[in-house]
Length: 294
Image (spheres, rainbow, N blue to C red):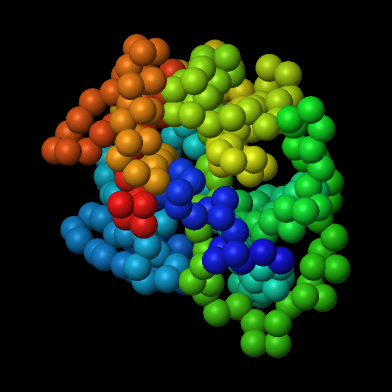
């Protein structure tokens, strides 16, 4: 199994997915889940907001509370799931045993050929994936497309890799391996993310789903219209994904992406030095430069 340190796909100089921010209705309930069930560590806390990390330094998730927010309608555009990539298969086996012991319900458990994954939702219905990648040398590519499938995960085989020590919170090398989004239209989304942001298509399922990445990862961003074809973004004061960050390796790469987005007439603004853009489905993202790349 390739760990984060040994895998350049998730390191500078390549762009990566950074912090995801969720708008939540009840921050105490959500914090209890992410801290006590999934084992994230509180990095910083203020009134109505908390940031969470796996290693105590790099923030993966932020929760911002709005007690007036209503749960997002499922057929709107926005988050499908945030996918947390674990360093090794033993970690996935340990979290599976841990969730079973806590009697926390899973929504699915799948073998995608390139990866093995568990699916669940947080208390406010935000989709989550916890997964581990297979060695990249085993991935199958044909005509520029990676082979990914969905078949039942071999639970018994996975549990054979569980450690004696058991689950002890999110491993410090955990990161957001990819983010999967519900969009209104795949062609508009492809133009924004590929021609604008600079990702490459790696797998397409007709008009329903598109997987895109940098440097031949199986996907850094997934896009689908399964529940959201032709739909718009959530109403104001809705829970769910507020925005996520794209971390570029250096300022020059970010400037090039901004120029491409402006050429597409994409919505883009600057707020107190922060560059924010919005895709055609109304999903916001922050364009940042990785500290490691500066």
